Length: 108
Image (cartoon, rainbow, N blue to C red; front, side, top):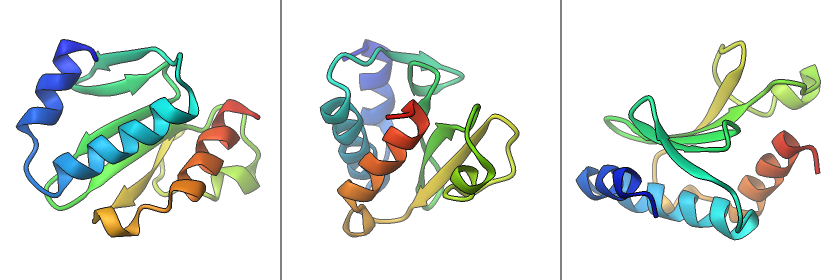
């Protein structure tokens, strides 16, 4: 794990810390060889995904470049190149759903 990513996760408070760890595990399990970076103050995964701990939730961000309007509708936000899903608790993480969204972005 990138040392900056490790430090970022460590400084998060609960439940954001545990949510980030779980989402990160899903990304790395789905794509074991994905490159993890620390850019713009948060963990990034090949410019396709990011994780950010916020005041009361975590956003998992997704690149929407090259997606159809229908596919873009699967995500929240108004970004032109990135959108996100908000996660407020560990219990609401649906691993199969997250994997499906990861694969939509990677076009698999």
